[in-house]
Image (cartoon, rainbow, N blue to C red; front, side):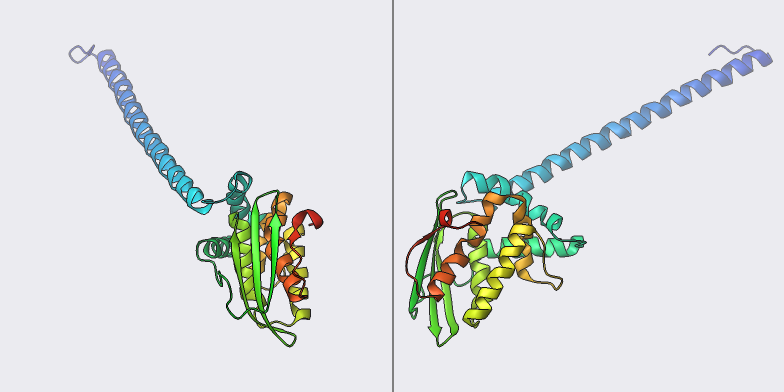
Length: 235
């Protein structure tokens, strides 16, 4: 340091030099902390990306390529189709779809079924058979079987839980409500599991995936065993 005796100028220069050194040290520490923070953020991003990739892989296992690209976005952004939906409610609806895809309800041939109908969606490769046990005008039992993308499987699973115990008129009304949800994104004001599929309307090609099981169920309800195809519907 340039400091000589009791010279005031020397003291001033010394203090200025020390101040400059101190600032440089502070900047070095700051940049060091920022570099560490940046590295941590990048690491967390990679970890989150890997987790998201694993979730998507599990979610789309067995799905066709078109659905595999679109399902995660449709689920994560299902809130776009639901007016003023809270984040918590959106998360709840996301979990509904994921849960029905991972653990489908009423899957498999119904031994006591007295009506059955089959549906096919050539554009995605979905296939669905619906088995009904109809007593009078009421659906006493229902199940489904088949294969396809996660949207079609989750929708068919949810459908069986909604239609069991319903009359033919009530089943028709439920389908109309569901059809409006997946085609317009407008969900009912009350909380309903059907609203979980509101985000599907963002991807028109996936609407056929979501409604395939419902069309098959209505055919079975009308005792029409003619195989249906989504190509004959205007969803």
